[in-house]
Image (tube, rainbow, N blue to C red):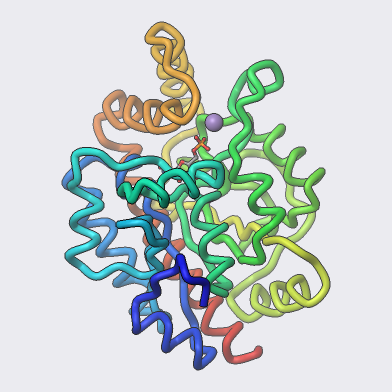
Length: 303
Ligand code: PSU
Ligand code: MN
């Protein structure tokens, strides 16, 4: 193992034995969800992974090491600390060298999970091309990192606050497969369907595992497995569009940009929807954790 990695014994044993492990990110805990729901969700996601037969490994930076798997006390520290850095690929070295507390984004988690040899990762929504990104060039580092790190990433598509058609264009250019998990369309995070057709679809964990095994055998980088949010939890697309448009105006007026933009927009949506976007976010995080565990089990079984 890499000297900067500190792997929880339970996770290290599972990896060494070829048993299923699912990586979980920590930006969603530290910056993506309001407190105290964030700690409850961090615990519930780990429990969902376990209930579906895999070992959860939440990733974060602590005391100068990349932590792969956190104890409950460490999860609590991450969810309640006053200052937590948002760590993408570009931030890894600086935060490690200073020994700061860091929550890894999808990009940061992918980079670290790849070092540890983890094959599955569950998150909520990917980062992507922000609206207006064709001029601002605000394109999440999640996209190039997906092209580098050999993991299957179960998500509900990319966040509704993004430009979804351009996000898919960039993923195509990068050669990252975007596969519908039980759907033929790219989901839109808070909504089941963005209206954007996907070129490939798999149904169920065994089909997903077979596709991942073929990809890992012949291609570098990862695979996006896009699962629609649970039907009962979804919001109407027109309502989400109106909420996002309002939140975008607020961000512009307050001069919010860069890494602060995504957490700002998500928090404004929670406030403006009276908590309804939070309920969808929580439901899809749990569903994605469960699906990633199912796929990790199938992949470990070689089916
Ligand atoms: N999806 C969520 N909540 C989040 C994020 C995604 O439901 O908080 C986080 C992820 O960690 C993702 C990051 O990698 O937002 C993207 O941020 P940016 O657009 O600054 O790259
Ligand atoms: Mn950005």
